[in-house]
Length: 138
Ligand SMILES: [Ca+2]
Ligand SMILES: [Ca+2]
Ligand SMILES: [Ca+2]
Image 1 (cartoon, rainbow, N blue to C red):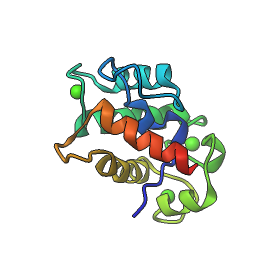
Image 2: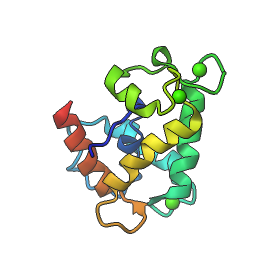
Image 3: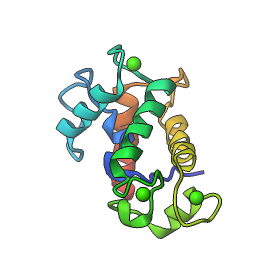
Image 4: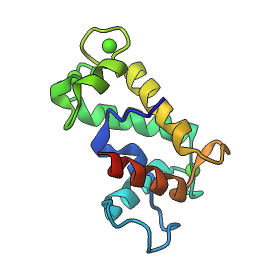
């Protein structure tokens, strides 16, 4: 199953790409400063990896940031580039909006796709690879 980023610009994954562990070489097509900032924000204990707890916490934070009307649901108009097909997949109960649980469920699919060495934490390198593929497919 392909990953389906619904909260794209946060590019959460994209996000996680930085924190100073990555070499200077890697991120030409990506917004590296933004990625660095988001990785640092997500890596709460500063160990250079984003684990599941940190990932979920960051998704919650991000969902909150996108929820412009404060109803705790994300609708297509609140998502900068939502694609109808992706939104539909994420919207499991088909009510036309994404609950926090639906958003987290969707992003967890990304998490396991990104964690290619299956150590349960996301490194910068894993995120950069993931984002490069995603950018290429966009
Ligand atoms: Ca961490
Ligand atoms: Ca909302
Ligand atoms: Ca829903």
